[in-house]
Image (cartoon, rainbow, N blue to C red; front, side, top):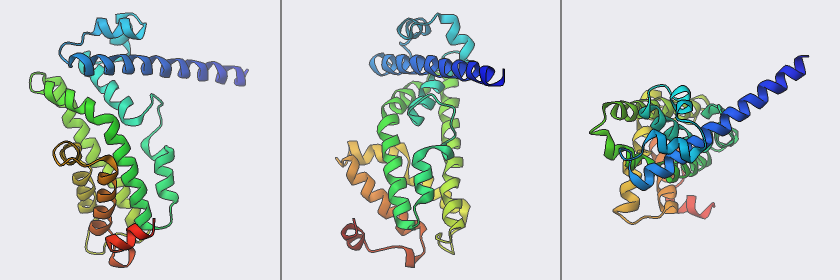
Length: 226
């Protein structure tokens, strides 16, 4: 009977993930079209094909909880309960033996995430001044992003690539700052850079900031090695 129970559990989990994904996608579309304040739980439930009570049951915290779901799903790209460290993009970074190429892959992942989350972040940021729960959510996402920046810093230290005069904590601060949504947003929207421009700049700047001199190449050398 164990395989049958496991099958039922897997089906339930997949159904729950599918429902969360539908809710998140419906809410994201409505929030981007109308703004956070003008999007109601009833409208999201209708668009997702669920009853309103399902939203309140699945998302503790009401509307800020809905915003958190939209953020989490947009950040990950799906509704699967897989930690960031277990996702293929992160595994590819870990598997890459060359520190500079590690950071190039990391920059590519960071810009792909930025491309997904920037519109959502803009909407939530605009509404946070009038909604304390939403402001708390955005503050928490920043703390989580700083915490998450420690992972790549620790990995570079573990493989002996991190500058000797740079602590893991300070390296994480650099990664957090350089991958800021607001920073990348200004490069794209104010400076007129495209995503590839940002990716190349981020990879080069991370390498020059974090790696021992022997692990880095001059910008032209890095470009020629592509």
